[in-house]
Length: 111
Image (cartoon, rainbow, N blue to C red; front, side, top):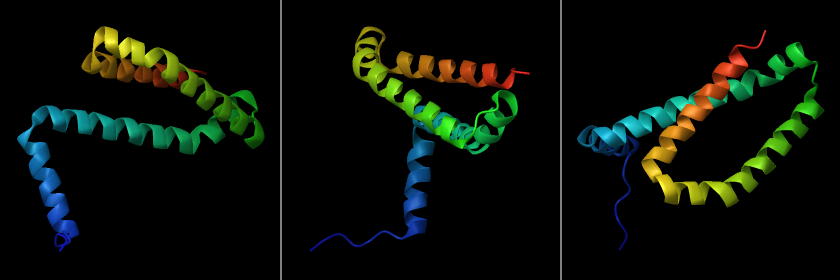
């Protein structure tokens, strides 16, 4: 027989206990949440931003995101794995967050 299903409240309670028992896990999950929240906000307003600043329409923005995604696949496939082996996972995660933060600030500083 299978396990009894866990209710949503029990699931959230287990998650909260796990996060509070390991402060490093809490910090990583909090930073990941903020990063994804920022990315979601960026994706939501990027069409308006690029239209105002660069007069880029929906099809051009879609092509831009497609090229950026393809570049990410290639970069992650050939560079990131080797970089993680050299500097370690925690350092590479931290540097990735710093790089993304720098990119967001550079986009925000465009006039």
